[in-house]
Image 1 (cartoon, rainbow, N blue to C red):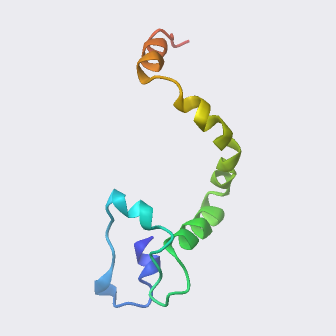
Image 2 (cartoon, helix red, strand yellow):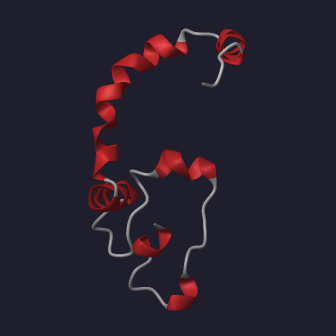
Amino acid sequence: MGNYLNDGQPKTNRTTGFKINFLTELNTTKTVDGKFTFLHILAKSLSQHFPELLSFAKDLPTVPLAAKGSLSTVTTRGSSLQWV
């Protein structure tokens, strides 16, 4: 993704990675020409290569309910499952 943001810059100025705290800056980090944000580039890439991921919003209503569960309960119950 960084390489798309840096498009138009010298090839020696390539981005090789980013730190996880960068995720909070997805909507403010812009391309060299300032026309698009990282979030725009990410959405375009997902729609072209992984369109099925764009329907994730339908799963969001279950997140608050899932957050109420405890990790220890899930771990305990999960360990009692048997592979068939």
